[in-house]
Amino acid sequence: MVKNKWSRLAFSVIAALAVLLVLVLAARWLRGLSPVQDFLSTFPGHSPLPAGAPVGLPALARMAALSQFASDPPDHPLWLAGPHHS
Image (tube, rainbow, N blue to C red):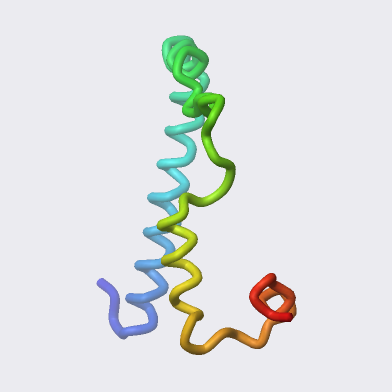
């Protein structure tokens, strides 16, 4: 059916976009149904933080994010303006 590499790629991209379009339209249709709307109002997908919860990234995530720049910090104004430079 498809003859060369470029037409096969174009066909694959068009087919993938068509599948994505069908999925989006199906999701929008499902979201309009009354039982789904009731479920989404009952379970909105977020919850309030407890009173003593810290704001921002947990300490372990901050350390992991900063440790990747420890050996060679980027030349970025926000990085250089941090508290570790005087």
